[in-house]
Length: 125
Image 1 (cartoon, rainbow, N blue to C red):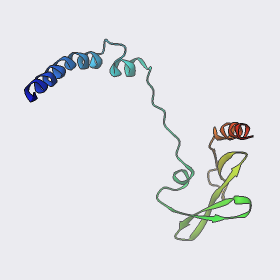
Image 2: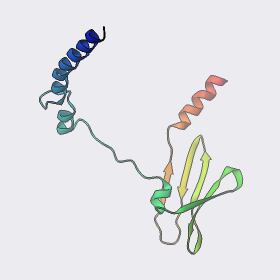
Image 3: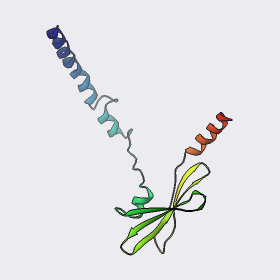
Image 4: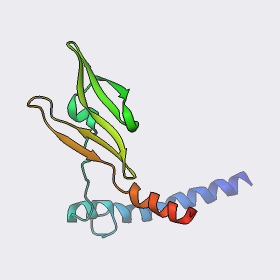
């Protein structure tokens, strides 16, 4: 029984090489190489979050304020530096970075949750 099973597996492996060579070839439009060369497959660079955009490798401190607002600070050798605030606004989780002196200003929102929350509210009601 083990010999028959071994022969069956060996034949399956031999037959699979034909399919693998077909996938790897450049002439087949479904192959990965052909898709990347024709420009059909693209890679998008994702934007960094607020922590890595402001300062890489720093330690961040979060302090709670009124109405669920969380203030974000960065620890430096000179003390804690204000970076921005996090808040939950209108069904969205929003992180904002404000201007500090002449530094870079950013604004980041996580979209797509507002519609989902409103749909679930309608279903529940």
